[in-house]
Length: 495
Ligand code: MN
Image 1 (cartoon, rainbow, N blue to C red):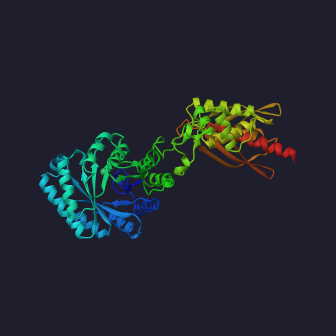
Image 2: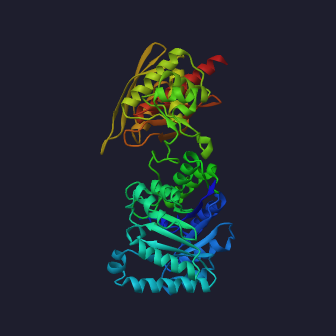
Image 3: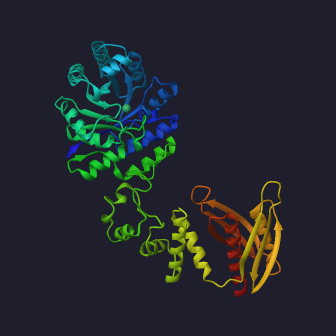
């Protein structure tokens, strides 16, 4: 097994993601987690960026982690001095090597850049820093110039070298060829890939196969433009798809790490993101769910538990009866076949409206269906609402109470208030059911969300909660109220 080192740049390249700016405490929390999961090198930031950045790097250094703490530096004395001032273990010294960068960006010659780079390697080494010399835009650089820079830097004392595919233009084949031309150098070779074409992880692995022993990455693949190679995807791929590589990373902490970084950076993941996306171990289709229940390997490449995750069965329109029964069993919901069919039909109906049904939704739907079976004293026959600007919200309802139709109306501060008021009035001869609490939640996104209304109702001294889940908030409120009132009345009778 070949040991591959993980150089994490979430706090440097990752923080250069448009819109991300981390506070000192947030940086510390991320660094803490990175150290805990076994990252070998943490690039803590670029100290000349700001005072805050410098303080954050100093604070990270003070934690005394197992991981090596690196500071980013351009090949200028000011940058290396700032790194020295932070007391970091190493400097990630970045030298632009492509003619495009040398001529257009720096307006210099190759010789000038070469000399400047060697001076800074020497200066860093002299000040007790480990040096990882990185070739910026290395993948678009002349290989003989690269070899010259790397060879000379090694003589001076550079500890590691790195080639950056700064704009992500490599392919796995080109990466293999390119890094092979450098793998004979006598210090560890590192790879730094960007994801402009979605190939960052594939290219990183290709470089490792050609001899690189360290890779740069970020949690969730955040970073400039399309981001960097993702830590979790690279580590888990090496672990699960190759037999000859190992890392120090605790794979079962990767999901937690991903969520921490997503939360603190505010960059949330696409649901279909590999390894850590919400859907990475979610199954909806009846065929797939059935297969996974029998043997998870049928539709899962690895067990989610390995990553500290759980598989999810999404109850949507593609679910089969078997998958649904499994979900109901998991949720400890008792049912008969009629009820399963009714729940099944409701889910298909919601699915056709474009809804997914989470466990919470399923619980609510099941509650409603299971309730249906009981005989109801009070049921809703009609409900109409008038509401709007400069109109007093008014509700009129027709209730059937003990085989008798009752028609009532009421006004309120809003349509829900008016509707509940009317229902309450309608049954007041019968029972004074008091509304103790009202809670509403849109459990799916969008203005066409599934609305979950949960109420607490009181009759005599008994308090119960009731709920209804529908797309219409007023209907849901009235149905929840009636379902609770029916239960309270039944309980009263039984007393
Ligand atoms: Mn980069």
